[in-house]
Length: 309
Image 1 (tube, helix red, strand yellow):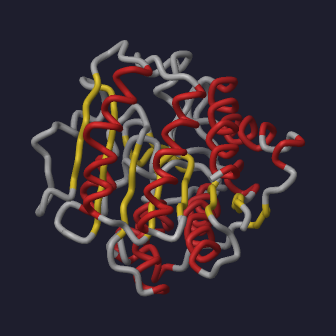
Image 2: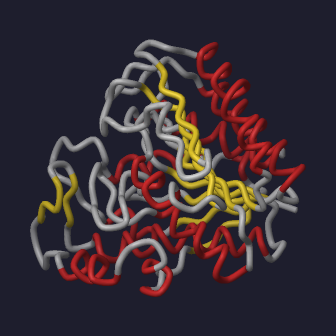
């Protein structure tokens, strides 16, 4: 089976203020990298809109309605200190969540072995009732709950290697023992959550903060000694990845020192566990990454590893 890629050009129409790091150029860089001949074998699909019912499995209905009704007809509207909406944002956020839903459907029906959602805005900071940190809806959490509702899965894992802690996903998962969340991230750094003692209701949350300037050795040790053993013990029926690439050494927003090879290695290691417990089923979605060249190269390495899994 193949690797599927889901995206939608509406995600480019989510406009941010001049100089904002979460710009449409991020997705353009990723999509351009994935046009290379090495990716000719990708099964490419257009992301559908996420239905209100799918969003409401994570976000209260009044929050969803409030966000979508806040989309301006012109100009920009701030909904958080660093999160804005533009006229194209309503369609973008629905397609971003819809891409992860479609990716879940593709791997669950056997159309693809694994899948990557190349979308923006990112989602892992969005808590059930709060948009924050460039994120509006929590795309990966919406996808996880869709896997339960539409495909009857129970035990779903999200592993997040973005440089920032995925506080929104943790908030959506921590009180459900059948949802697992693991995160490697720089500490201290925004959003200020993700300490090791944050363990969830049943040890189903694993946080591994890394100090500034930590690199490949520290990251791989964190994966091998803490993240992967906990994931193995959890025994997921579906492995999902919040694939942020801002822990790269070139990224301007943080101070970790990862390389493209680290992202490929982490992808292979997660795929090994997906093979054992989840019939190889793995769904990944784009989160952060703000140096365009590093983002493009890292996303390419990640997708190549998915294709080889």
